[in-house]
Length: 537
Ligand code: TNX
Image (cartoon, rainbow, N blue to C red):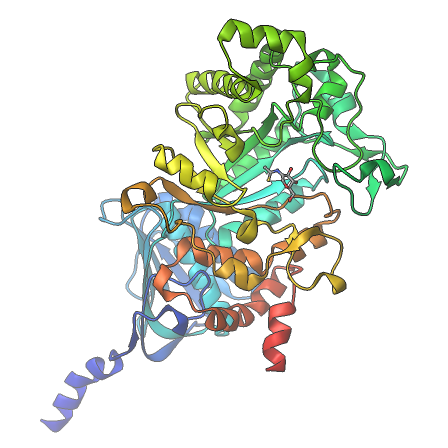
């Protein structure tokens, strides 16, 4: 009788919860929304069997089997669901779960992952990979219920100032998706280079994609006349086939790609190829230094709009997602003030000043993009002179633009420089490679709150999420790009995915430190500062 009682109570004892609801107890970044730990650990068997309940989840499960194979663990995948599988993946599209959410259970019986969406299954797999890796295959019993805080979780990459290979962009996307980002903002055109193939305009490839040389060291709008140059031609662009390849690769990892085609400013490379698009008619040169340039698209000539519509006619089919970014930032008005075409346009349209002319320009492009079924995003300068009716505002010069837009019932993506600019130094500049002159530490990023305090709960709903940006003026190599992004992007991932109340920086650094073997396994050149600090303490 006594024995019987013991055996009856045994499962109960084993399943006693140790710690409920504290994400920090599990080594996962971004921290899941709900974690319950139990006594015991599940050791992955030598021969792993993964079962998938439906064919349509097979593609996603390959991310798990590929990881396991790279770890020299043999794993079979089958859709023949058996009770004794070590890892069961269930895609249950009838489950009443939010999009991107998943439930993961690790117990004596094995591992069970359930989601109502393929993206949720994908994120569950990423969590599982971290658990397996940081516990050497013996995973403490745990039950995780997870879902993101924000629907928009972005990372940006500027390929205009410096170019990055397709292979690197894929690696960038791999890492983003591992940390549960779901948007890649691809900044494709700049003063210093046009990077997307447009077949109708071959000079964009021949001329706009290359600059004659590059400034050495720091340069800005004010100092570039004093600068020295390296004398080396630099450039290149992505073919439409390469773009399609990247977009497809990203979509398999549940990442939407947003192209940015800058207008009306940051257009000097395009003007060099087609000088009639500028107010003065040129000649222009693809910029060799950094800063803001006064030669921008002429807002008076119809040919400007024809060109941009043609460009979008080729760009839009490459990017099936709903958003298109048109830039809109840093467009000096000095040329427009003196341009007869622009002044004529202002008279005809009854525009009071050049800010309203910029607004006319942007609104006209928005109409075009909306007619193609796309939603337009612009940097916060698009607020000046009147916001385009359906535009999403990307707030970068502080939080103010985002606040103003949300107060006007416009959707907002928060990316203020103080917390989200990964081209800034991450620590004391004296020992760092050259960067834009300001500091954003990992701890700064971790302390960011995307919902500005001044918004009402109703207005806060317009904040879609947040994004970190990597501008590449001073980033010439892929290793350096990774050094700037990691571990800051891990901090950002937690800001946009995890519950706000659970954030604890010291504890985050511990978890990040425990994930270093995984970053090493993926050959990521992450910055070490925060880990070295912990070692010294
Ligand atoms: C501002 S953010 C810019 C970029 C620069 C960046 C450098 C934005 C919309 N414009 O053109 O690369 O600062 O941090």
